[in-house]
Length: 79
Image 1: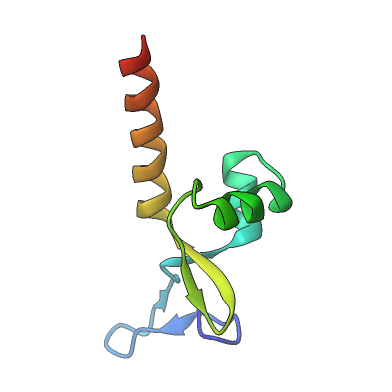
Image 2 (image 1 turned 135 degrees about the vertical axis):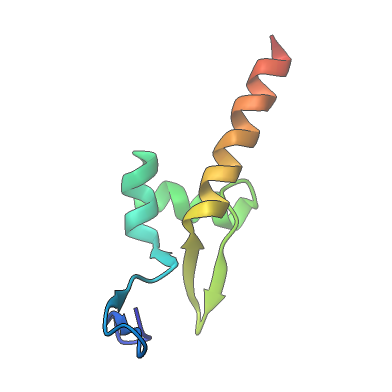
């Protein structure tokens, strides 16, 4: 998606290229937490990695999934 929320067109194929970046609301829904929880995690530095673009947090799905995997490994190590 562009900065205005529209999908980008692939010039070569004419197909729509989905954005690699997710909105906070999408990530909150994906993680089944509230947006305010996700915001608290951002402030505390404990949540999934994010990119700030013009003051707006955006997430890469791969980074969110990697963060989840790290949590799983941490919990498995705890026993």
